[in-house]
Length: 455
Ligand SMILES: Cc1ncc(COP(=O)(O)O)c(C=O)c1O
Image 1 (cartoon, rainbow, N blue to C red):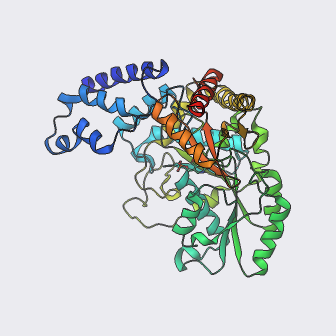
Image 2: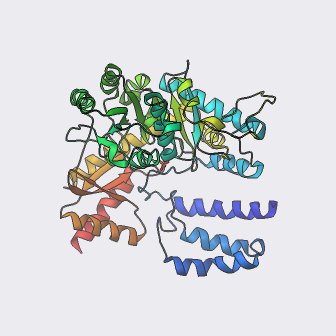
Image 3: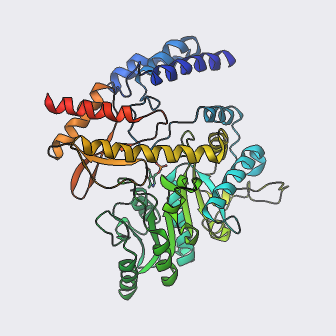
């Protein structure tokens, strides 16, 4: 194994150096049939022998990989992993201590407990709170809503949902919430649109009226979801005001901080989540702004009993009297086998400590503001003043032209960006995840767009 690992590490060193020096494209997207053939995947599955062909395989694989470490990567909300965290992922892969029960991975549980403790402290829930890492923000949102349902309708687990149960969230919320409503048997249509302003932020005054109206029509809002921050715009809902409305109405407040909760580590940016301590649950992805490799998403609750009650289960081979020098986590997760997610998150954060997290989040947020200034100078439109590292902008031209620009930029291999709809129009979207992306890369992007327009 060691030779294979050494070979892989050497190839990865070259990959990272090439990425930083822009000696390879940020994105290539060869057709899958061609890629399968080039990598020899189907023959290798049948015949084996990968180790003998590892070098060629790695070269072909890395040549086609979407290169997050390239400074032109401004694409998706996926971490550019802290390099040390890759060592954590390797440690987890080799030891393979799926640690939903303590006896199967004591040090991984310890790392998870320490990370969850840190996150709870940042949320203001060090006393009485609890949390668990799960495989992604989507599963974390589902877990939080399962806990919310338990409080609103304790009989639902055994008997099915009572009629009228619903969740209230801005229509722009991440699609995983509609999926969670479907999976929980509420029906995706019972994800009711919260009243929002022109920037898609919840209007707290109108929210109080909307909750009262739902009740007047025989419906039971089991949770309100607020975004911190919203996926498309990167804007934060006014958490304190929303939390006050929820408290008054006796409704669970869930904060989807999958992308933006890492601002809690920054004394400067924490204000964006002011009032989060009044919520009931919070999702915080470590594989976004904490720079852990995928996936590691924390679901946190203000009151531990809420998470303990979220699922009910029966598995005598796991749940029986045994020595318990540390906690089991299995009753808090959808998963039975669960990777050492907290370990990966720990490696990412412990590389530079919380000051390192703060500097990274602040730096990427400042770059977004800088990008907006440069776009405006170039005559581009900007959808909203950014609060995070997400920027929505448009070059002159119609909606179709924005998508055509994106296609041309990706084909060029120097710039990777996404697109999103906002206010009924198509926008180009940057998510500035890469710590090596600078204002010069924004200028290069503007230059490339301007050249495409001229062509
Ligand atoms: C606000 C928000 N919530 C949830 C998710 C889903 O997280 P994951 O991709 O980890 O499932 C995302 C993903 O981008 C998101 O932006």
